[in-house]
Image (cartoon, rainbow, N blue to C red):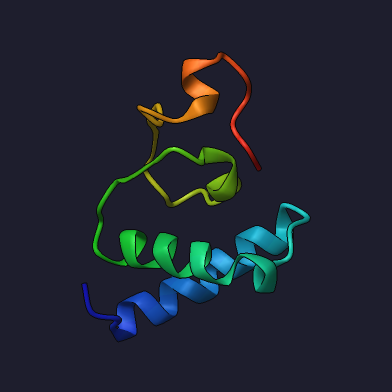
Length: 80
C-alpha cells in the first residue's frame, strides 16, 4: 500500500499517541508507519505482536496467534 498524505498525518497522530503512552516513537518507527497506514485507510491491523501497537487509540488492533512459532507451540510468552 503506498504512503499518502493521509498516512503521513496519521503517522503524526500515532507518534504522539506513542509519546503519550511513554514509548519512544523513533524506536518503533516501522511499527508506527504500519499503524499509521492502517489508521489512514480505516483498516484493521492483525498482528502476532500486539504489544508493539498498544497505546494507539485510533488503531483497530486484532491480536493473532503466531501459528508455527516456538512460543505458541511451547506455551511460552512471545518475544518483545
